[in-house]
Image (cartoon, rainbow, N blue to C red; front, side, top):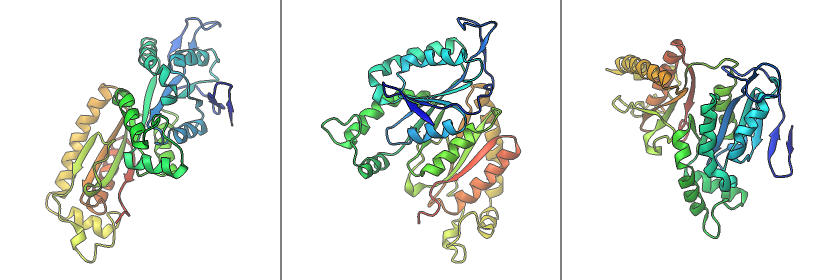
Length: 322
């Protein structure tokens, strides 16, 4: 359950208050003997209508202490309170959005303060296309919080400009344009449900170029050099999840070699990501419609990454759109 305080801040109840992985010790001003464990911190932000509330509820269900609409200047104070809880608040998630835009300039200072104190913190940024956001606001018949006397698209443009720098600093960017609530929760579960923090988590996403590039992709792979099963009448109705389609794709010249060499390249990239402290990577694998070649290649690539110890989630963004 959650409790709402008088200033509109929502505080999620604590479940499973275990010790956060990699939590550091902080002996300063703890009010108790010895040292206190600094809580692990996740900052949830992003576009209005992109699913921040869903993300907050998901983390609350996973045992995080969730604070909604907290002014950024108070984030270090929240971490201090968690450190004094004697381990009862080991994981804190804070939702920061444009409702607190008067305090938004303080966010950079707060993040610098947390980094100076070696607080383990991550930023999750939720993104969506203009079309998806307009559709969502129109469906609930609510104005965008920044549109003022203008249109919804004006508010979206203003918000993108305000959040541009934060998006660039995010550890994890999730595009929810084509995700429903359950799919978003599944992606967050995959990232945060584990008791131990893996070195690297990967999302392998198939997509169709005719529907546009995924905005949250870190790496993009093009499979359109392979013959298209769409032009084989017996394979056209099926997807890359079908064994006959997958066999057709990987029997083409260059398909297996491409998979092997790209998997080797990802090993090199993953090692660099680990050295730089990057925990999440999204690999987008594209073909024309996102139905056959990209799906088959994504499945094989995901299995290869998983066999090498990378925790991997597979998402087929455009499968079924035709």
